[in-house]
Image (cartoon, rainbow, N blue to C red; front, side, top):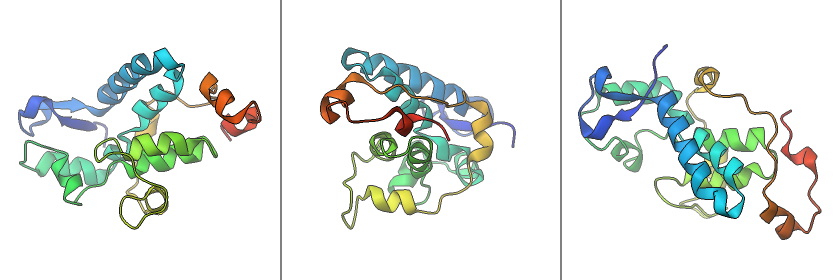
Length: 171
């Protein structure tokens, strides 16, 4: 599949010419997130959370759903449990950023339903991180490569400088 879509533009329906390209959507959200996080020094973290928030939409299952469903609210399916497109990005965040990737994983996995807690029975990040997700990796070639994420200053404050750069390097 060469073309990936995020959602219909303003509820206009499902024909491909009315669908927003996924790459465009992810980059726009990433840039907006960067702007919103600038006042507290988290702009780079917010950028990657925005870029990865819908990685699961690169799966064949989500693309098939998007092109076939008739509902104007494309997120309705996730709410009803039909298509999970947020767990993939949360898992990717923890893969790319060991330990501190969980910070991004909370934001990514909860961007529709709200923040999850760590270990409860229902809204649980741990379950989302272990969940089997549909393959999405083919879509990564459309996004900027991730290499190193400089930590925001508020983490230095929170961890009193005990954090090492190694936790932020791509392996």
